[in-house]
Figure (cartoon, rainbow over the protein chains, first blue to last red):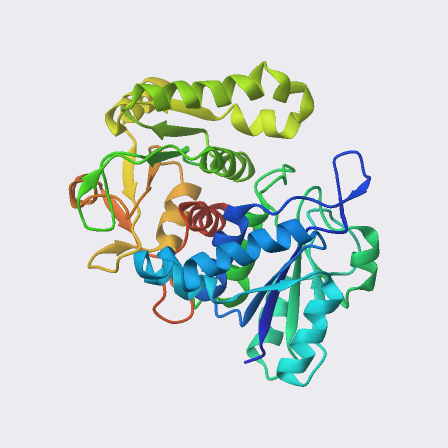
Amino acid sequence: MADLYLALLHYPVYDKTGAVVTTAVTNLDVHDLARLSRTFDVRGFYVCTPVETLQRLVARIIRHWEVGPGATYNATRREALALVRQAPELDDAIADIERETGHLPRLVATTARAGEHRLGHQALRARLAADGPPELLILGTGWGLTADVLARADDVLEPIQGIGPYNHLSVRAAAAIMLDRLRAGR
Amino acid sequence: MADLYLALLHYPVYDKTGAVVTTAVTNLDVHDLARLSRTFDVRGFYVCTPVETLQRLVARIIRHWEVGPGATYNATRREALALVRQAPELDDAIADIERETGHLPRLVATTARAGEHRLGHQALRARLAADGPPELLILGTGWGLTADVLARADDVLEPIQGIGPYNHLSVRAAAAIMLDRLRAGR
C-alpha cells in the first residue's frame, strides 16, 4: 500500500473575491483532519502556515494533546493529534516526506471546481492500493487552492458531486468524503 | 426518492464516563451539517437541544444568515442555513416531519459502536432511492446517542469502518461520510 499524506494549506489560497490570501488556522480543522488521518491510515498530516503566531498556536494544540492535560483526558484524541506536523509551506511538507520515505510524493491537489483532466477517486484509490510512491493530498482553506498550486500538482482530484450543482462543503467535510472514498474498507 | 431528514441530538447523549448529559451546541456543527444537507438534498436538518439559551444561539445563527449580515455576505451559506430547523427534542422533529410529509419518518440512529442487526449504508441508500416514507437520520454529539435512542429507532446504521479499529470521528466528519455513501451520484 502506498503511503498517504495530507497537507492543509493556509497559504496561498483564494478569498471570496479571488485575491490570494493567508487564512487563519482553525482549531477544529486540525482536530477533525487528525482524527480522519488516524481513521484512514494517513501517515502524516501537515498544517501549512507561514504565520509564526499561528505556527505557535498549532504547536500548542499538539503539545496540549501530546504531553499536556489532553494526553490523559482523551487517549484517542492524543493518538490522532500525534499525526499532526507543522510546515511553513507546501515545499517543506514535500521535503519532509522525501526525507521520511526516500521518495518525492506525487502531489494531488483538490478543488471544488470542475475542469479538464481530473483524477477520479477510484483511480487514486487504485494507486494507493498499489505499491507506488507516496501520495500527498493537498487541501485548501478559504475559497480554495490557487491556480498556481493546481498547475504545479501532478494531479487534480475530481470535485465531490452531491445531488445538484451545490458544492460548498467545509474542508473538514470534503476531506472526510475523500478519505472514505480513497481508503475505506468496502 | 424518499425524503431524507437529519437530526443532531444534544440530549440525551453520553459523556466519556457513560453518564447521560446535555452537550452544548457547536456553531461549526450547525454550519457543516447545513452545507452537507444542502449538498446531499436533505429536506430539513433539526438541531435538537432542550436548553433555551442554546436554542436562542441557534436562532441567532439562523437569523444572521437569513436576514442579517450573512445573507448578503455569502449567498451559498444562506442557502445552506435555510435548511436548519429547531426542535427541543427528537419527538418535536418527528412531529414536524409528520406535519410536513403526512407520514411518520423511519428513525435511523447512528453509532460508532459495532453491534447486531446494523443497517448497511447500501441498504439505506436503496430505501432512499425508492418511494418509501421519509427517513430521519439521527446523529449524536458528545460520546454518542444513548441506548434508549438506539432501542427506540427502527434501524441503527452500521458504523463507519476505516482502516483498523480506530473509530473516533467528529460528528461532522461522520455525517459527511454517511451522506456521501447514502446520496452521492456515483
